[in-house]
Image (tube, rainbow, N blue to C red; front, side, top):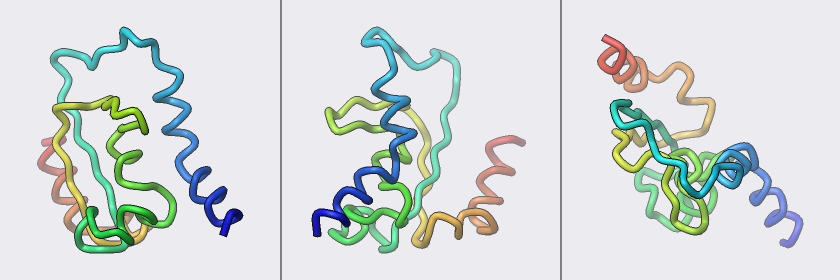
Length: 104
């Protein structure tokens, strides 16, 4: 079980490094609009399985730029959550529609 825990802890190291590397005075850009997409294996990200496993690569808080201390990189970001695996997001019609709306 300890081995599985180590794997899960390493999944989102890139996001953790980004958050940990920020200066304490970091503030989101005042006029930027942030759009965030996450997936979990469960329909609800609050379900224990979804909360613990995320999408098997990234847990939802990491996808939204939240660290273990509660810091949030994108506090006013518009969020989109889908049920599925990380790679399901690549060809998802809901993501394509959101991107079209966000970039249009």
